[in-house]
Length: 107
Image 1: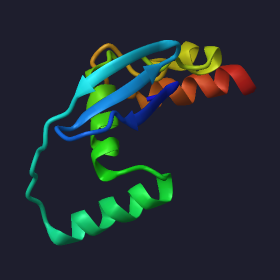
Image 2: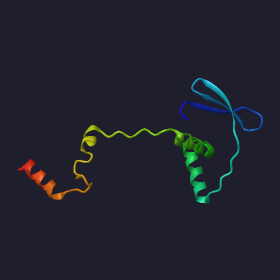
Image 3: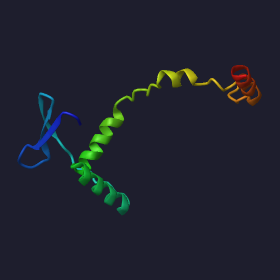
Image 4: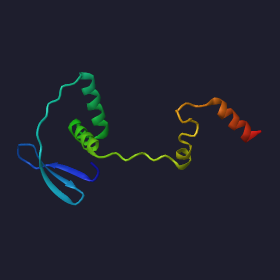
């Protein structure tokens, strides 16, 4: 996660000290075994290596992001103004009306 630093707390048991911004936390971690195709595992390891993270960290980050509500992607003003312009009330484009529109506008 952005602004997060992680370091082993020492000893055994999967305890980790994490820093989120300026807040220090001591977090207990549990082990999880996943079964998946060998090709997927190779891809995950290759991607983790490219990103400088562990596969566990990538999965943890993915799940944390999946829980966050997604913001609606806003369209640029011109595109937003054009949404639905060509569709008739039933959602079907009326080609004759469009041709007439073009003739009226450009001739």
